[in-house]
Structure formats: structure tokens, C-alpha cells
Amino acid sequence: MSADLIDGKAIAAALRESIAGAVSSLSASHGVKPALAVVLVGEDPASQVYVRNKGIATEKAGMTSIEHRLPADAAQDDVVALVRSLNADNDVDGILVQLPLPDHINSALVINEIDPSKDVDGLTEVNAGRLMLGKDGLVPCTPQGSVILAKTVRESLSGLHAVVVGRSILVGKPLAMLLLAENCTVTMAHSRTKDLAATCREADIVCAAVGRPRLIKGDWIKEGATVIDVGINRVEEGGKSRLVGDVDFDAAKARAGAITPVPGGVGPMTIACLLKNTVIAAARRRGLPVPEITVK
Ligand code: NDP
Image 1 (cartoon, rainbow, N blue to C red):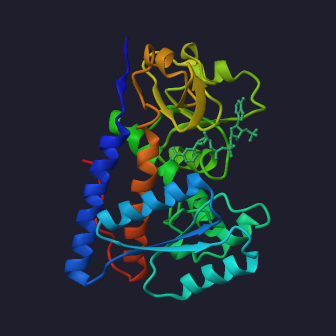
Image 2 (image 1 turned 30 degrees about the horizontal axis):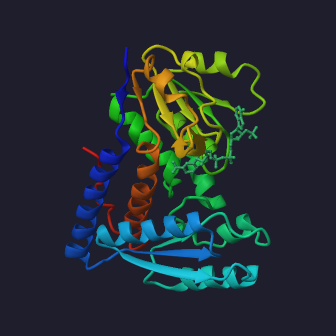
């Protein structure tokens, strides 16, 4: 058996096309052009690339991209003041503070300053609480993208056993909540899980969000299972640097029914879902119906 490849690049492109359509309809019927403001503190090279890519994708979808850069030694109060000014700016629909922030800044405190209605990363306590309570809110992008990918290969997730490996606030926990909302039976595994191999072998859906290259072995995957690999790990192999996931892709592919590659799986969905959240925020803030956004 060789698994179907879940092509995150193509699915993200379809989602972005649908988002561009939603933006056009918001603009045509209500004169609204959604705007996303990104705050970057410091000069971390990876963060600079992410911020640039987010800006390009935002503009391509027909929205306004605003970038605010602060020096690496900016005081926490200055970052908070900037977030507050973006909260107060009626032309800004979405606010994203690029993580990680420099060590001297309390990230949780800064994130919680974001107006929940503009929190397009879905990381404020209010949006985390809404997700937990099953209420409408803004849902973290990577978990949201992971579920969209799983749904492209499964007619319904209802009743399936999903094992989420990793319990971070950014990925694992919200992903488990979203799968629960899809009526999966969810197991959350982490570094203290006693027998991770046996736990994974029971899963119809394995979601790996750990940050350990190829931790999940091929023979941990049940025949026909869906594998969503969130991990992005840089490894040096054969004198070359390459990206690999948390799943041993080649071995898992031989047993899974469908699997996401790394790169080209969950990664492209993250930015697409950020754009989707920006459109949702722009519509909801104005009391407008949220335009339909789909990958079909
Ligand atoms: P964190 O480091 O915050 O969390 C890692 C989680 O993995 C923790 O819950 C930890 O458990 C668990 N873990 C660590 N070692 C093991 C182990 N040996 N067995 C089982 N569980 C283990 O990472 P993130 O959630 O932020 O990110 C996870 C991965 O996803 C990373 O590779 C990251 O680069 C990637 N990522 C990809 C994105 C994308 O767009 N595709 C976006 C965000 C992240 P414990 O809690 O017990 O310590």
C-alpha cells in the first residue's frame, strides 16, 4: 500500500482563491477591504521571511498588508503600546504579533493585549476559551489548516479516533479541540505518554506536532490511517540541509491511507488560514455575514 499524498500546496492555493473571491465580494457589496497588521520585533531571519511571505499573500488576496517593525531591544511597554494603537485603529481588521518575541518580552502578556475580535492568530485567552466552549471565535491557523487537510481525504471525521502528539498552546491543544468539535474521539499524547507507539497504532488519524525529526515511525501507523504531520525540522543529511517532519515519511507512507508531506503539507495552510481569519474578522467586526470560504 502507498498512501495518497495530501497536497497542502494545492489545497492552500484553492483556499486562497476562495479567500480572494470573498474579499472581492466584501469589497463589491460593502466597500470593505480587509487589512492585516503584522508586528515584528527584532531581526530574526526566519521571522523576517515569514512576515514578508504573509505580507505578499495578504496583498495577493486583495487585502491591505501593514507591517510594523520594532528593534530587538524595544521595551515591552512599546510593543504593548503599538498593539493598543492597532486595536484602536478602525482600519485594521487583523493583528498578528510574530512569535517568538525577544526573551525580555512576556509573549503571553503582549498577545493578550490584542483585541480578540482582531486576534487572527487565535491565541488570546478569549479566543482559546471560545474554542474550548465551542463558541464562534478566531481559531489558530495551523490547527485549523490541519483539520481542513484531514477533511479533504475523509468524508467525515465523526467517530474516528484521532491521536494528537504534542500539547502546545499554539498547535496541539487547539488541534485536539477542533478534532473534538468534529466528533472525533481524541487522545492527546505528549512527552510523558507511556507507550507512544501503541497509542499511535490505535489512531485513525495521527497528528504530529512535536518538533522531533521522524519521531513517529512507520510501524506506529495503522493500515489506512490519515497522517497529518505538522512538524518542521531542519536536519543535515548527506552534507545537505533539508526539512523533515515529525513522521518518518517514507516508512509511514507504506501503511497510511493518506499523508501530508513536509514541506508542502500543513505549512502552506497556515498562511491561508491567517488570510481566512482576517476576512472573518473584517466581516464580523462590521456585523456583516461572513462570506463562504471553502477549498472545494
Ligand atoms: P512545542 O515545542 O511548543 O511543543 C512540542 C510538544 O511535543 C510538547 O507538548 C511536548 O510534550 C511534545 N513532545 C516533545 N517530545 C516528545 C516526545 N518524545 N514524545 C511525545 N511528545 C513529545 O512545539 P509546537 O507545538 O510549537 O510545534 C511543534 C512542531 O510543529 C514544530 O516542529 C514546529 O516547527 C511545527 N510547527 C509548524 C507550523 C506549520 O505552519 N506547519 C506552525 C507551528 C509549528 P510536553 O508538553 O510533555 O513537553
